[in-house]
Amino acid sequence: MDYLETISELSRRTPSKILMLVLDGLGGLPVKELGGKTELEAARSPNMDKLARVGALGLHDPIGTGITPGSGPAHFGLFGYDALEWNMGRGVLETLGIGFDLKEGDVAVRTNFCTLDGKGVITDRRAGRIPTSECARLCDMLDKKIKLPGIKTFVRPVRDYRGAVVLRAKGLGANVDDTDPQVVGKKPLTAAGKDAASRKTAKLLNEVVKQTNRIIKNEKPANGMLLRGISSYKKYPSFEDIYKLRAACIAVYPMYRGVSRLVGMDLVGQPETLAEEISVLKDAWDDYDFFFLHFKYTDSKGEDGDAPGKVKEVEKFDKQLPKILKLKPDVVIITGDHSTPTQLKSHSWHPVPLLLAGPSLRADTGKKFGETECAAGSLGRIKATGIMPLAMAHANKLLKFGA
Ligand code: ZN
Image (cartoon, rainbow, N blue to C red; front, side, top):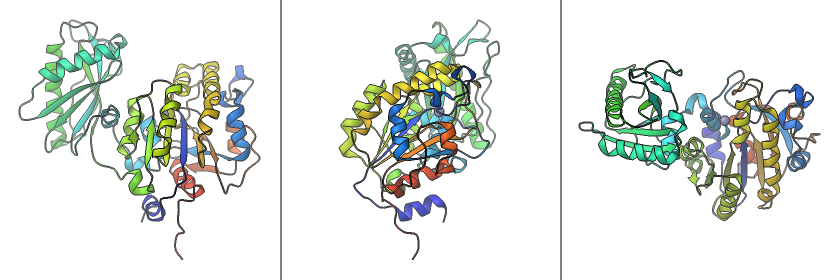
């Protein structure tokens, strides 16, 4: 029996509540202009520090040492599903995240509207970042007009220039590469499948693109479509199955909502800001035992290379923390899904700060929630898949293993 199956055997329902707060891309590296501190260390974050003094600190590796994770797989890790075994493509995640009801075997694709010149060469991979309303108008038109013989197709808007295409038919593979060449000045690639079932899918997707190009030929600036994250939906064991938890996801962005839905969390509310997320959390508090709340902007500033901006986002979150803690969760986890050092302007492999507060803890000497103190913390350096079992244990939700 593997670890997750063992946890599932040991877990039991109790009234205690677990709260997991994820600041996306939280981890960083020492920044010169911040006096050699990381953004988290430089931030004035009295509320997280207060929790650090009564809690325990550590670091986690989202997937494995040295592996730089995408946010999708990193969240599987946080939820206890080893991403090396349980990962899922972005097409499925975003489609689930917008509330679409996928059926087993559906192929879901994340689409980006783009701008093509007269020769079909990409001049803007994001079609001038058209607003969601424009994306919805185009997707609605495509949804009505695209016809593939004997196959159901769905086109849905996601956010800004991003949409989703779903193919529903028997025997479709999803081993198909993206058609986004990742640079301007080139034509979109042709979808190609790597096995017979995936070649069938690729052929259908190329037909979807052909029809799309015809239908939106005269639109500006979005007159083309790039395909990414082509994946096939399958059911996952849920939070209820494994942890006996009624779980709620509170997140703004579709992909995080999608990972959560895949593991059986309810998507509560449609928040757009941190204040709205907290208000949704309050409203849902009595109905669930587990809450995942996602905060995106620490990662955005990391990707922008904006160290002072990342500090501000940490401070903004910290200011709201007392409102969250007023709900009196039994166990609180504060962490990131991966590191996004501003120097690298991208995700990285560095282990991620982790704070755990709750009953039956051996508190350590940590006084400030930050990378250096986390490296000396009593939780040590663990794999992300250990976080949920730890939280479950502290919430008194795990029975003894063996006699
Ligand atoms: Zn992330």
